[in-house]
Length: 337
Image 1: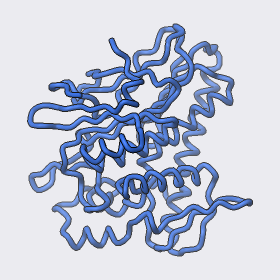
Image 2: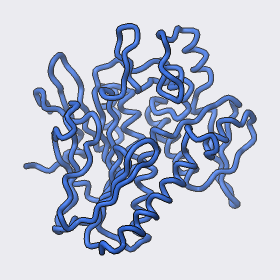
Image 3: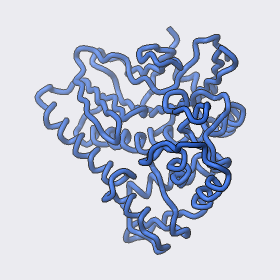
């Protein structure tokens, strides 16, 4: 399916403006923003819900952050041994899902790619002064690989084990989806059945808005204009996430350096795929697939989407035009206006 110029998505634009009857809560977490829109919820609960949401997201950040030295993940990364380390059931779930999608994408989605991300200046360190050479890339790649990581499920708990002492796990590519699913779970625990929740570019909805209509999510055009809407979808209780290459980059030695790193080559992607949007049962799953597809590039991403029957929307740059393609599964969510 082709669209001249009007393509989708470099990042997920978020939801339509909520109706006046919706209760909206917002805040910051994981270096991004979160937003919760609720229907048929008494405004007197706003303060309590705001506090509970922020507390939960702060706890998630203390588990997953690679920027906080005392997080569970940072402690695991500092550990220079190979003995299994205890982790929570939720962390076991996110790593297990990451490994599953990593295998399906032939390693394109790799949560051990941290040394390469850091080498190219998209981690805590500043961008390099010059393009990393082959030896630096090879040295960083030697410290990566999903085959070096495994989750151990036992009757008395869960453990994470690495057989490469220097392995560095970065769950930021899955963190927004993970936190979004957590928000949905919290809403259910609070007895709230009509909500739209988001953390960064991951979104999930249930039920209807205050006008008894399905929650609609807007997808942005590949432009820096934040309100440039390309399409709208009805998530039907699913999660959605987008990975894009056009906003998070810098210039180095006269070239644009994308934050999306190909674990196979050890270099930032240089193909023409601009963005990949995925709708899945959970926001976590959508968040993992969009990254893997983005790394693969247009043709391989299309083939994998069809093979796995994924709901996917891809946008590629061809000359001065954008060309978009959607899988049959994605078309089922599209709102035709």
